[in-house]
Image (cartoon, rainbow, N blue to C red):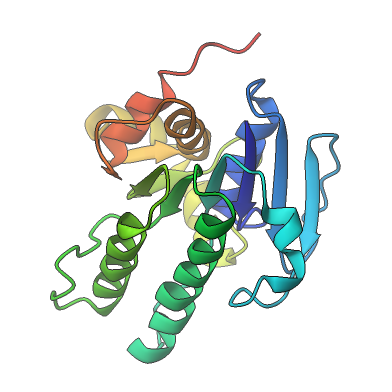
Length: 227
C-alpha cells in the first residue's frame, strides 16, 4: 500500500507516520508539507510544497497512491468563521479534489474532532465548519472516505505536540492516562492506536464512515501483531 500523509510534522500526523513506518503492508509513504520533518527512511519520500490550494506543480508525485491520511488542522481560537472556513474547509476540499481526480481508487481519511456538527447548523462555529468539510468529503467519488473524530488523544512513542501548553497537559495526563483508559475507554485513544486505525480502514474498510474513539480503538486492535 502506498500512502500520502499531510500534517506529518504535527502530533496526530506524526503518530500516523510512525505506525506507517512500522507497518509491513505500507510499502511507501509520501509526506507532503511546508517544512522538512527531519526523519530519513527508505520508505519516505518527502515533497515540500507551500500552496495547499494548488498542487499543479507536484501532481506527478501525488499520483498512484492508495490512501491519504489527512491530519492537517488549525485551532479556531480567535479566528473569524470566514478565515477558519478558508483554512479548514477550502484547503481540505482543494486537496481532496486534486487527489480524487488523480487517484479515484484512493481511500481518504480525515481527522476532524469529537463534537463535529454534521447538520452544519449548530452554535459552535468550528463544529459547523468541520461538519461541512466532512459532508463534502463524503460526497466525493473516492473508493472510500472515513472521518476520524478521536476525542482525547494521548501522545506516546516520543510524539510531542508543537504547542507548549498542550504538551504540558499531555505530560501531566500521561501519569493518569491508564486510569482514564479504564474509566472512559470509549472517550480516549493514543497516537499509536489512531495511526493503526487509519491503516486498518485503508486496508480493509469499515462499517461506518464516521469513527469515534470506540471505533478507532477497535480498528487498532484488528491489525495483526507485528514481529
